[in-house]
Length: 386
Ligand code: G3P
Ligand code: CA
Image (cartoon, rainbow, N blue to C red; front, side, top):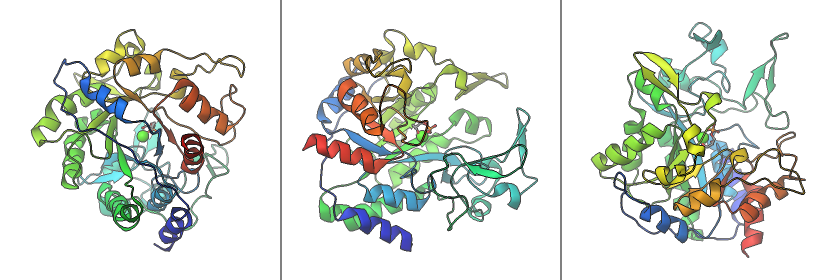
């Protein structure tokens, strides 16, 4: 906990206060137009910074230390990717397997499944107690020849140094709400949650309803209405519609929803037909009229950066798609992912990370961004909004 204290004190005292205003709005009925989202969009003037997996440019993604650091850096929202354990606990982990960020392979060498010819250690095959016994680290790959682990991002936190563990969704909410009490309240701001329900199709196939479980936890911790500082995001359009049309009304809650958009060939989402997994086709989300359809069940979209500014753009000519314009016309907020300053991660149309942020925030006009580098984005936005 010492590291949390140091990180928080390091950034908090120098931070200035900005506020985000949300209007309270009604639940959207199936098939209705987007009065709700219009209201939301108009009320958000401040561009928001979403700390992607925490301050993950500096500390292992989704560690509580990375979340405390993101808080101290004055993120507007901190992201949680949520998956489920064998004993139905919700943990904060980007993948629904454990082998990219923990030592599960050495602690439980035989507890894998083989998927597409590759061994994977699925979180859903382990109890929370087993997962808590693992060490968590920065994301790594394994060299096929030498079997050595190497950082996916070499300039980031070294592998298996210090001590980090996987946390539960509840632990993370309590950390953020605790900081909102001890620091935010005194300084006049509150940091929000940005919760992604991971692979609901997979959890359902395993007999688990991750969406209901997640929404129940959020309700228990006081997140119940649109004006609460929280977004719920998901790549699965059918599940997001189920959340809007059925689950939230059943639970008596009404949270802001964000449709994440993937390319079909990533195979991000599947649907099961007669026990056969079929990749979800995202192509319709790029057609004319798609944003109006999404606005019937969601308040915003989370697109991949190249869906907004094409990678064939140059410094002299940005090729900007209609997605943001269409989304705004439909009343949706737009929060693209993921802004990284690591070597090789800045598209060639931007000369550096700050210019990349400027293009999206102030030339294209998105409403917020997911970034691994909260401090840089907050600094740029504060300067712009002064
Ligand atoms: O959730 C938005 C952003 O995180 C992109 O997705 O794959 O990093 O969870 P991912
Ligand atoms: Ca995510």
